[in-house]
Structure formats: C-alpha cells, structure tokens
Length: 97
Image 1: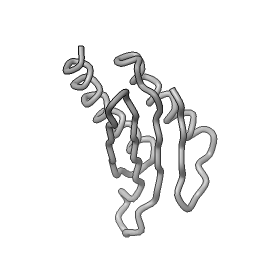
Image 2: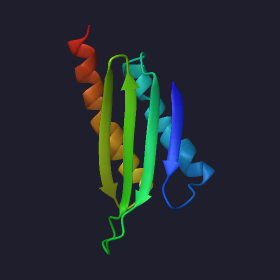
Image 3: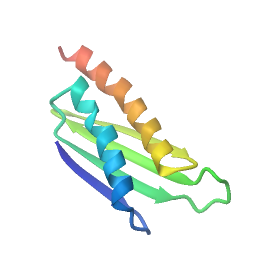
Image 4: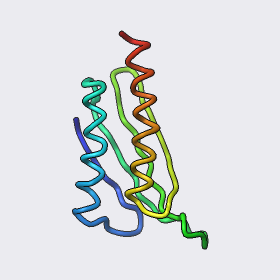
C-alpha cells in the first residue's frame, strides 16, 4: 500500500507520521486489496482545544473510502478516523466477497 501524509501549514514530525502509518497499516489486516492511503493533517483556526483535524482517504479497487475527525491531538484524530474507516472497509469487504 502506498502511504502519503500531507501536513497543511506545519511540518509533522517523524514520530507522528510513523504513528499514523502503523494505524493505517492495520487496515490491511482486514482487507489486503488497499491500493493507497492519503492522510491530511491540518490545524483548524478556531479557538477550541479540539482543533486538530485528520482526514484519511484510502483507495480500493473501484472505490474510495474517506473519514475526517477533529480532536485535541493528531493521534486521537487519526485513531478516530481509522476506526471509522475500519467499519467502512469491513462493510466494503462483506459487500464484495
């Protein structure tokens, strides 16, 4: 699976990138036909503490799944987005098997 992280208006450190990579990689255990994943990390300009946004898009043969979550930290947002994608991947797998 191709893996790409885009951090918007800041640079994500290697620790954060590898943390997210490990989380997204676990989706392959559910469905091994994942072509690529793209992750966008951005900071919302509002004043709330929950201003970290993680958007995760994965490409499957003939389909694209997407989840966007906003939390206090990028790790928490990535966890939530990957959890949401896990459900979508399982649903996709059941539909196409």
